[in-house]
Amino acid sequence: MQDQYGREIRDLRISLTDRCNLRCVYCMPEEMVFKPREELLTDDEILTVVRAAAELGVRKIRLTGGEPTVRPNLTDLVRRVAAVPGIQDLAMTTNGIRLAALAQPLADAGLRRVNVSLDSLDAEKFRKITRWGNLQDVLDGLEAVQAAGMLPIKLNAVVVRGFNENDVVPLARLTLTHDWAVRFIEMMPFGSVAGFQQSAYVPSAETMAKIADALGPLHALDVTGHDPARTYRVDGAPGTLGFISSVSQPFCAQCGRLRLTAEGKLRLCLLRDDEADLRTPLRGGATYEEIRERFRAAAYRKPWGHGLARNVVPKQRVMSQIGG
Ligand code: SAM
Image (cartoon, rainbow, N blue to C red; front, side, top):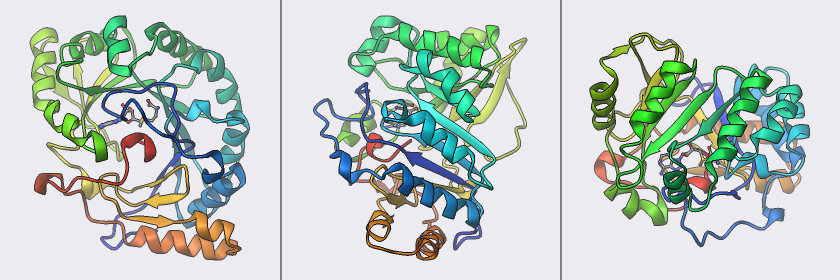
């Protein structure tokens, strides 16, 4: 399946819920209001979309949120998605808070890999950036992921001025002792949080310079595939460093990704408000073929790229309502 610009659509990110057990300052406002449960897609509705997507050529599914691990019956849903013919890779992006208990059951159900979001190794700063999170829960979760063999582990840190811009060095140092990919993400602006996001934005170039000052030169790696991260290694490190620079160095030309929001909107570009409603036809008696064709038609009109450089900022949703 290709879009109107000839980009192959291979990846679908599925938000399982807009709810989260944290309230990261860069992701959502503190007084966030969540959708009523009946507005979220059911497991069966998600499975219908996954089947259609896989038939059209999607090979990789990433489950996200909100926080995917707070969705009821998660392992059962993972087992069903993993069994859909054509799906070759099933991963999850999570804050890791619940992984100590869930990593092994999820691995047994067919989850291949997890990306864990971790913005600081300092317990106090971690609490401040997440508004109430307990760092030790995430560290226990990482141990459980390692034990369950869902490798390689990827850690994602959003860099936020005034919160964690100096924590990038301790995080990068993890690559000296662990075979992990530690990735630093430029903060993107969304909806009601956009003002804060733009004022506390830290460009990747600054983060890279800080890490190189502390750990020595970063050697670029020639990584194939469609990873949005530019990847490096410091001398002697088993792990790698990645920089996802959606603001300063957009990678729209290589983007083959669509997102399904928890309430069934197919979002065609993370940073644009264009969406196609799949829930209405799913609940309105559309046939499976009609759903599949609606998916194909929406994918075709995926916009070329985001408009941040011209100050076009998505207005309708914050990140937790899209699925990062
Ligand atoms: N709750 C899960 C987690 O924490 O990984 C999954 C959902 S979260 C929205 C997915 C990813 O989006 C996380 O790595 C988070 O740090 C990132 N994120 C949230 N808001 C962002 C923003 N404004 N700019 C860049 N990344 C953001």
